[in-house]
Image (cartoon, rainbow, N blue to C red; front, top):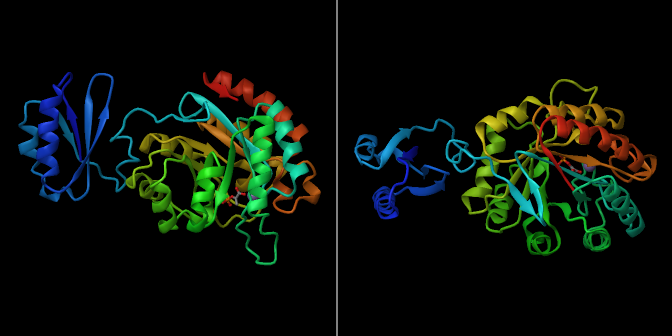
Amino acid sequence: MVVVLKPDVPVEKRNELIKEIESLGVKVQVTEGVEVSILGLVGDTSNINKYRIASNDIVANILRVQEPFKKANKMFKPDYTIIEVCGRKIGEGYFTVITGPCSVESEEQIEGIAKAVKESKAAFLRGGAYKPRTSPYAFQGLGLEGLEYLKHAKKHTGLPIVSEIMSVDMLERFVDDVDIIQVGARNMQNFVLLKELGKTKKPILLKRGLAATIEEWLMSAEYIMSEGNDRVILCERGIRTFETYTRNTLDLSAVQAVKRLSHLPVIVDPSHATGKAWMVESMSKAAVVAGADGLIIEVHNNPSLALCDGQQSITPEEYSLLMEKIEKLVEFEGKKLVF
Ligand code: PEP
Ligand code: MN
């Protein structure tokens, strides 16, 4: 339920109403708009007498929210959320590109890629230190050593870092070392992990689950937000369908759906969505025009020798050419490229 207040309501009157509503066992989330404020009611609203609240002279309107997600809901917060990380903005009006290898393989590898993509206007450096692999025999990541190499690369290039967390026991380390904590598709419904991430103040990049509906994905964002962390960035990375030609099926329409349902930023991962390096350029360009707030792209200095996801990785040279085109499209869309 959303209570829209009349313009310029005195704070005391607003607080009285909040107290009255909260005494009925629901939490009230206040959103201050330019002119009007909105009270988002979170919890079991069945005890709330809509007519009693509507009769209060500071109330302009009451809306029932159908969707189960509240804090992530655009009705609760009509203005798009812009998340600032290390001076770089992510959200509506901006276009932010996160680039780097699937996994950190060596100090030289991550340093070399970081330097190259920084030249080509990457805003963040990505790299997995812990890798969720289908096979237990496949490369699992360098672990803490990988995080150290990422930190060195950050020091040398100034690029903030994005890396995937796999379990709660690594939380403290990730909070200290990483600028945006990535939750991979396979962990999108690891609710224990989501709740713990919600207790931090770190920005979270929440990838869509392998076969998650948009509502399930937004409910996972809600898990993080319900614990107090509203710095969630969504990432469409393709979903599993009957099609096997591509690794996944990129659901570009999800970008617009999320933009309508939620105020949270949404970016696109053309690498995992297609699994094919030669499709990354076209899907990246399509993502800009589809309204995405950014991209996460896998780049490797030598894709044929990559320890993970080489077939979908583009080279730094290809990335540079791609970014020239992306920059033009971002400008065409009236947005600002962040780097
Ligand atoms: C990744 O970003 O390397 C990754 C494992 O992605 P996803 O969780 O989307 O499969
Ligand atoms: Mn990968």
